[in-house]
View 1: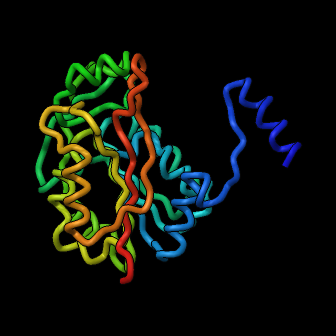
View 2 (view 1 turned 90 degrees about the vertical axis):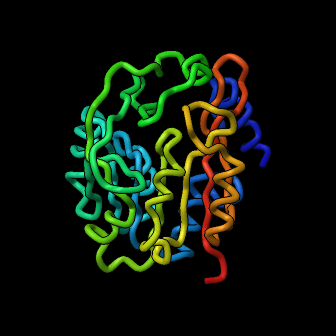
Length: 241
């Protein structure tokens, strides 16, 4: 323990840390444990960007099916190239929402802040370089359609949503497929960052009403000036089913 504390002290001086890799100390270990214990056999990765989330699941030991969905062209091309060497990881270029059709998505300068919704000044001020630089028309599909078209045979589904304020609309497209979804992870704003988004308190109550229990909560986006936490990732699972 003395050597560990000494190592941690020196590593922290360089801006890093050393933590125990288990469900109590590390967010990836916590998620990996939950996926394993709930026997998740299909992950729907909504808002996949370039595949960072799916790659982290693989690093955490999840080896079953992943479908990553990304609407913007540039990010999707990088995502597609990363899936080529993994036969259990596929991708789809689309936006996910309540129904089917076409929709315009605003492409952010930093890629990860792209959204169907209008970005509010608070977000742009908190993350310089995240301002919108273009728009693209993309296909819009629902989770119900995704599972009926691509998830045949899946028994326990985990739905990850990173859609920059569009989370409530995506949940509105989870009706027929709801019994299959064992867990949900979604990014939730604590303060208004996108026009018309549902904030953490309301999304949390909605998920509780759908029968999910909050298992983990992690800060993911901070105001670069004030250091305020502005978005969190919540992991929810059905317990006792």
